[in-house]
Image (cartoon, rainbow, N blue to C red; front, top):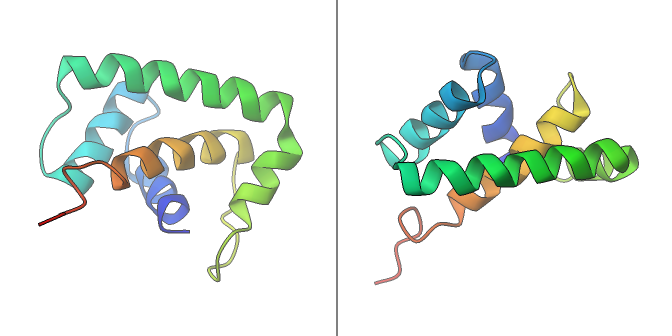
Length: 99
């Protein structure tokens, strides 16, 4: 649910360009810009998620209904793909403190 709402915020506040959206997500989650070594695989991951949710729109709908917050409106495929990407960011070592 947190990843879904985070993705909705990124999609609402950043330009329609994936690079700008990725930079916004990094800034919000990590307070820094993505490194080239991070940007390339995450952009590829986003593309695979888009392909998956285009082929499986019911799975996108299921993903977007998780949690107590009301479902977000808009392009379900795009939101589901970005939800998957923001989940990766939120579960990164840099976000999760394990000390």
